[in-house]
Image 1: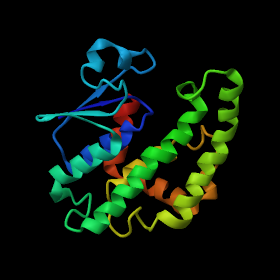
Image 2 (image 1 turned 180 degrees about the vertical axis):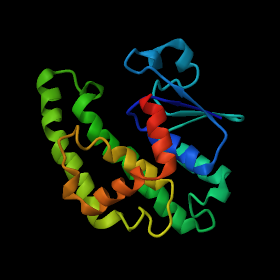
Image 3 (image 1 turned 180 degrees about the horizontal axis):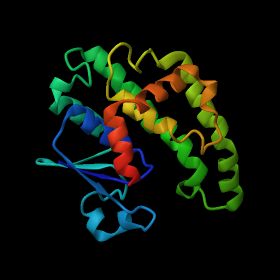
Image 4 (image 1 turned 60 degrees about the vertical axis):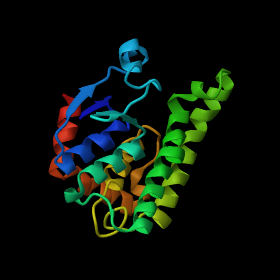
Length: 205
């Protein structure tokens, strides 16, 4: 397998999951700042022009929740999802879908407002609003969605590297993670995991 990622992007979650799963894979960095994601070479891999993309023997998978689920399902021995419990797996998917469909766009409104508007006044308003919206998202996660000690309870899962990845954006969004003690403690524990350390070092190189 080949994971296409960019430094600082949500692809970090898939990168960590691959490492946690003990998968055989190659990580390929895409120069997003240089516009490589819009070039014909990468668009042939992922026409959306986004990361992550996971190239498999059967084809390319895009979108973080789909990639994470694929990793868990193809590496069941790693125990990264409750594959034998349809309801628990749906709960896990619901959490990851919330991060993808709501929290990630809330963050993107701060620095990628051009996806939704053209007027500078509109862009400035989105930048002002982003800290409030991100804060509200994490208030819900802290109070209602995070089970503890891991996202889904006692077992570590593919939801954990995804939450950890998005937590890494809070400071840039002017949201103090200390407002969310359970989430902050989770981020600290995640940072100590060997797979996380290895991937962070690789992506920082």
